[in-house]
Structures are given as structure tokens and as C-alpha cells.
Length: 81
Image (cartoon, rainbow, N blue to C red):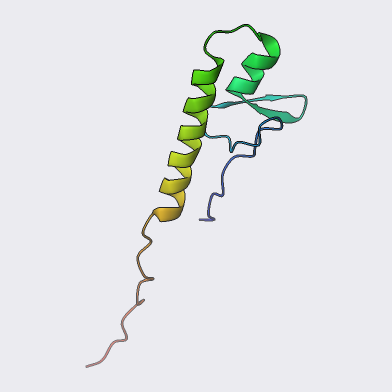
């Protein structure tokens, strides 16, 4: 199986998008905070959304890159009698 390198980045704030934290519109990817800011600039929770998205992206990157991948298996053992 090929390695999954992640979702693309937001076109406005350059934050790595994680699962469920982005909107695709017009062949561009926006994080939910940037999308809400563009559609409703007076929304009271934009900063909390942005903080959560950045924390989720950092957490996802840590999980992705710090996972311990064990050594490759030795393979089939030769048959010796």
C-alpha cells in the first residue's frame, strides 16, 4: 500500500488540511476557518476554529511522522533439513 502524504493546504492561510476540516470550492481548498471568514466575517467563533484546525494539523502530523514503523520482515525462511 502506498504511503498517504496528506490532504492539500489551504489557499489562504497555508495550513495543512486534515480530514473534515476543509471545503473544496472552485478547484481551491479552504480550511473551514477561512471559508467561514470569507462567507461570514462577523462570525464570533472564527479564532477558535482557526486554533482548533492548527492544533489538529499539528497533531495529525505528529501521528503521521512519529509512528514507529518496525523493521521489514526477514521473509520466508529457507527450508533446511
